[in-house]
Image: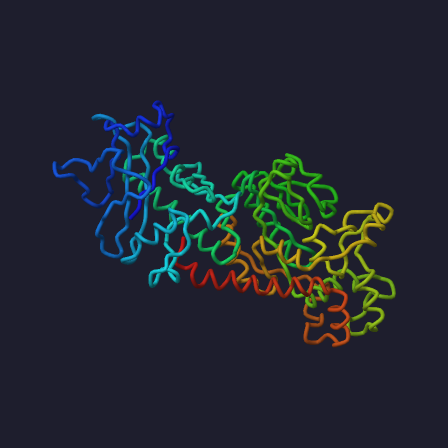
Length: 480
């Protein structure tokens, strides 16, 4: 077992030069909540700081299953140094646990001893995280503990600081350390599997962003998200969600960015902790590090649903016709050129690669009049499926066709967002519409040809969704 301490881990102003720590007057004391750590005189185990360095060890012979709740502090003379307390929690699972911890605290690679490579240490490893990755632990009675997970000592410092400022005793601090360690282990497991981190609570600095395009159960979720954000007093903006009296907005379904966000309808632009809708990538502020949820749907099923809501209901020569009644040429025209509109504005990006456009920030029609569209930019547009998949990989993925598992995924990754609902499917024709297996093969071929980028992203999203569920039902079951 290695207890690594460096100047800076204490929450108090160093009143003495570092040389003072090297004098015989300063001692490092160690205790544990459950173990009887005593010197030969029955007092606390305290040794002169001159006896310790980075490689000093505290040898404890413990049976597997023991949870350490170490408390360390500094003592000068006969008095304890106020604010120097720190706490460390760790579950001992086997005979090599101390060596595993050594590989983490000294920044080395996996140790070569048998069993170590396949069994990473169950302790916080800052090397698993990137700048911006934070742990937020809601506290009983309000407030939260926050730690910057990519910094080597931030978790320990955050616990010690909160314990000191709150006047918690050893049992109280050990409980807090255990909770923080458990959450850090969960986030570390997600990082090892290449999955997004859990968001305990949304904030302005780390907002929740819901991205979706038409016909992916967005209306269902927008209502739940807005209601939940309102209930936890998080500033939000989710236009076109049928707000159940929370706020009203003219033409609310024609807001495709946060430009209309005000305090009256949830929160001011630039100060939002929760946002979502038919937005596109990058709608948040530069200083924000968002946690995102993307809803997707099988491109063929989505096209069927969109056709029966937007095209079938029209009163011109395209309206009133079953999808399978269209010629291949008519269907190709709809896929390439058709976009919904009302009040003289485009209301969507149509049938062509709308998921990629959303992820790449290339939505050029929604909310604009024809004369406002940058047609030159539209002509230059090239969609990069690899970049779209990279961006989706930063988000939690939900699937309209896997609604029950999608709800479980949302509840696991965003525990603050709890709701009960059934998926809503509005095709414009209900059960009378074709299903994917019923659509003529040549029409499916046309759709796949026109939506090459979306088909790439669809394949990736299926893999990502499966990985989320497998982690949740497998390794993730062992974590909080």
